[in-house]
Picture 1 (cartoon, rainbow, N blue to C red):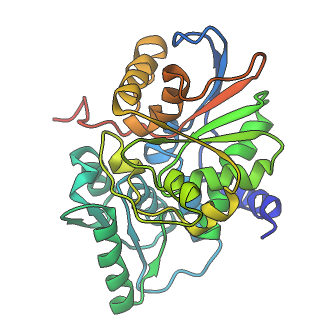
Picture 2: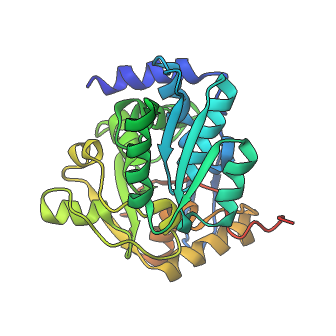
Length: 305
């Protein structure tokens, strides 16, 4: 893949559909040094996922049967949103662990939603069956070139906004977002993968030398709880640094983003910052660091009802 060219093309394709999200440089969080933040939780439907969804739909012919997607919540909401914006039908399968906030978000957009017992892998199985039976087009949550290129536009955009960091920390679930980062930066900036200790598909794959199945649980599992890392991510991630953070560290970072900058984010959105606050990743003297804040669909919704 000529990833740079694919991401540049994706950026042109989704212009006018995806938001350009804001950035800021800030002190605080008990770190003693400034960090750059990109507030991607302010994207359509509360996460970066809209980028990949729009890029996919705008780069292919959607069949009459429409679209189908399995999701822990954020991807499903993004596919539903993009489908509605572009005039397509969408069937979305999510696990119960997506939680009421994300389920309500998808329902509000108007997609055909099926809530599946168990975890993301169970929703994916049913989505594949639906695809076979109906002829609908499957939009994978993370392991597809168009998805990765769409997510890569986030980092191309950040550089155009003046990113100064030597190192960018990115939370990882199935790997679509960090694959986009690696595909765009191509070694020009260090990318650090951050995962929960109890949902760590990339870390386990790097340790094993191949993608492996992992058990998933914890406060960020409904966004970062992929059972197995995507093949595209695994290929791009060879030799990269991967760190793990506890649920306690994630929750502390989530609270800090609210208390210090009034940014209300879900646990996944705070996971990359948790690596700095907890010391899971310690920058070298003078190393400039940046954090992608990737999702804002907090549960329970504080304004529901």
